[in-house]
Length: 234
Image (cartoon, rainbow, N blue to C red):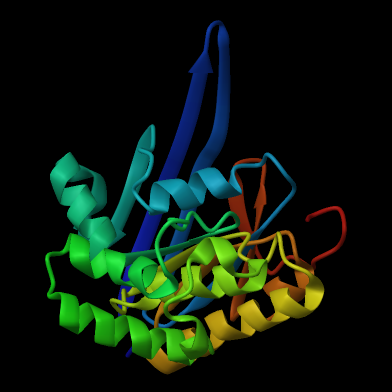
C-alpha cells in the first residue's frame, strides 16, 4: 500500500494591497504518495508558484491545511519550518540560485553543511550526485563559469544530495534551450524513479508535463484533474 506523504485540504491564499484584496488560492485540495510525480500547469498568474512556495514553507497560507506524513506543517515554529525545509524538501528553481563564487561541488555540499554534517561525508555525497547528473568533470569549476544547462544540473544535484522525500521544481527547464531542457527533465524523472523522490513540477511546458505521472491544472484558484491540455490552459 502506498504511503501518503502530502495532504492539502481547503488551502487558501489571499493578498491584500491597500484597498485591493486578491484571492489567489481558493480551496486547493491535493494528495500525494511517496514516489509520485505530478505536474501543476495553468496560465500565468493563476497561483501555481504561490502554491509551490507554500508547499515549500517559503510562504504561509491564509487558511487551510498542509500535512506532511500526517503532521500539520504550519503549526511549527519558524525554526522548525527551517529544519523541515532542510531535511524534507529539495528545491529546483527556474533561476538556479547557486552561489557563483563557489565551485559546483561546494554548492552541492551546502545543504549538508547547514545540517552540520562532516566535510568529508558531504564532499563524497556531492561528488557522487554530480556524477549522476554527468558533471563529474566539473566538480571544481566555479558555477559562474558553467553553461546554463550545467548550472541547472548542479541545482538538481544540490536539491537531491540529501535524498529528500520531496523535490519542488518551479519551471526547471524554463530558461534552457529545448535539448538541454529535455536533458534536465529526464534527469529529474530518473531521480524520481531511482530514489522514489516525490516530484512536484510547476511548468508551462506541455511536453514536460506529459512526462510526469499526473497532471493537475490550476483554474480559478483550484486544482482540476483529468483535464485535456491545450494552449489555453498553459
